[in-house]
Each structure stands twice: as C-alpha cells, then as structure tokens.
Image (cartoon, rainbow, N blue to C red; front, side):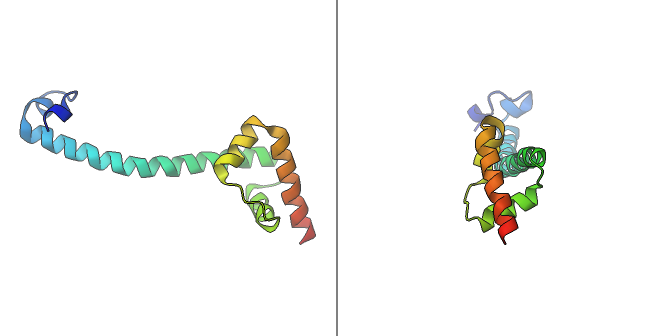
Length: 104
C-alpha cells in the first residue's frame, strides 16, 4: 500500500496507516470524478451544439426535437464534433431537423 502512495508528500507516503487512508480516499475521489467527467463532457457537447445551431437560427431543444421527428439518431458527442469540424454536414442535419419540425 505504501508503494502506491509513493508520490504523496510527508507522512502520507512514509507511514502505512496514513498511506492506506490517503490511497483509499484517492480511490473514492477517482470513482466520483470519472462520473463527473462524463457529466462535464455532456454539458460541453450541448453547449457546442447550442452555439452552432443558434448560428443557424434554431435553438438546441428545437433541433433535438426535429431530429427525433426526422428519425435521425445521432448522439451529442458526434453532433458536437460535426458542429466544430464539419460545418456543412452540421448545416444539412439542422436543415433536415428544421424541415421535420415544419412538416409536423
């Protein structure tokens, strides 16, 4: 256990009891933060999609509603990547989503 706490400072790396406690606490934080990272990335993707689709004259929520009605199944990660990397493809997706909204 002390070897896993090798990079820690002071008694947290030298004494078994404190190294054990520090390592256990680090594992708790690591588990919590893996879940938080997923949440943060989803928020980032939504922000990017919202900014790109507002430039096209539609809001994020209306875009997602239109994509659902148009039966376009694309996840937020790929949609955000398209918004940043391939604006033409993103514009086509937005157009199809907006058309599905108008048709319904």
